[in-house]
Length: 303
Image (cartoon, rainbow, N blue to C red):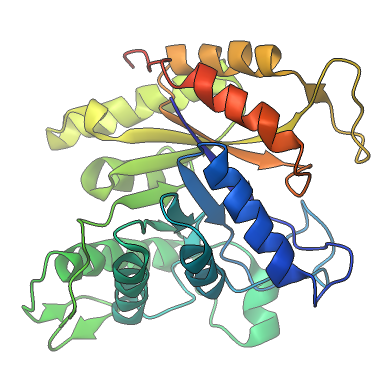
């Protein structure tokens, strides 16, 4: 099992001047601990699950470009880009640039978008959910075409590109990850287009249910479901026995975390992405390194 880190809060002491140095330290700590991937949200206001909209929030792709410059190995992506925020041709160009400058480490994580407050606040059109999914499918088609170097004109319902030129090309075939677990639309698009899905960690039973639905969609399109990397976003405060978290979150030891993520692996999880309340604590990464080491030989079960 691979292990990644999502940084979802930037409300750090000394902000805004401290944000660059602190994020650099977090990115380097994650890489030094052996984590496979580093993710940020693609939001412009903080989301209600994490704090008030006024809380500090950095633009995702600028942040990942900074992370690329201060790291060497860790893979980089948004969890996930809202399809409404950027024209698909510009988005593909942005992700390609990140891939080239990072040495082939970029992912395109994408979803149908949901945060109406930041759309309206910043003047971004917020169409109905059905249209957002139509735009998502067209964006997936355009991104794959541009990543593959195909300059054929694209004509869809919502987007038309006369010449989807993308030079330089990405250094690798940029993986497409779709976030969300909607059974009728999102998971169907995963089966049809994606290299990976991202599910919220709602426990092994819920994951098994969603993956069974995804398998059905894969069967419908004639695809081997094991071609889809299963990722999950999981909140974790890693500590030692007896530790307490200032946030009030439950602290798990490495052994407890390994046992729990092992249950998720048995139903199909390949790649856990941690959202850590203590991600700015340098000492936590000693435990992260041990968690990474113990999870590495854990393999996903057949789903």
